[in-house]
Image (cartoon, rainbow, N blue to C red; front, side, top):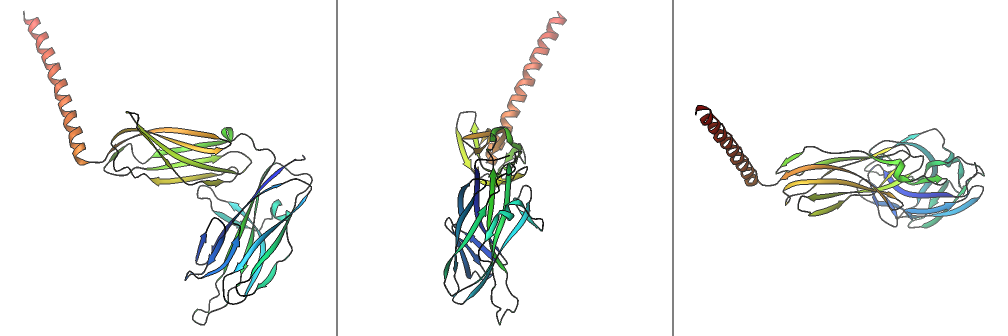
Length: 311
């Protein structure tokens, strides 16, 4: 099948033996003592490709050290994990990794040098529809320290994600598989919930959920949560505590998930929140009064019927 357009995303991320930081414009790898060693930018590239063509892109790399830094580039493959969005690296070669060509795989960056690394992506004339992914790793070789002879291995990766073909409607292919709270009744505690969203399509999806709380008096509030990437046939999980110190009463809670193309899917549940012990005592007293009132009314009715029978 020939596909007219190929939508391609490259998302940069860093992983190393110590720490990593990500900004909107770049990715920085750090050692355990938070020394910045390598910066890659941009962190996100949105690319549109067509089958049968070769495209050229540049990755900018900066050596943040005051000494020379050897660097190697590799293209690696992985399998996606459910819920937490993790990766298991594998030796099985993906199709997308076969399409990526690196003009340089080994280099030495001078102190504080900034260099452009060319990346070519060649798409076959005929490709199967669906999602494809691979990782371009930049591997700095750090010098050994006299105080710490163990060599530190740090990596900065560019995650390449491609959707081939025209994706189907996310409304039919993305679902909320689970939305629940730990308890229905919350006494002086913040409720916690679990939300699971499953991508049933062949394509990669980016989704963002929010929680909408509404009481019986019409008051409502929205609580947005972070956007996450879901691979084909995978599930992502959000598990959060809601800070509801000033909330009391019965609330309907709706999980609304933006799945792209202006489409939202939702699922509703209910919780009862009481944030004060005095309110709990008041509710119990009201229930006792109502119970006593009901019992008294029944006793009066029974006594009246008994009196009529005695006549």
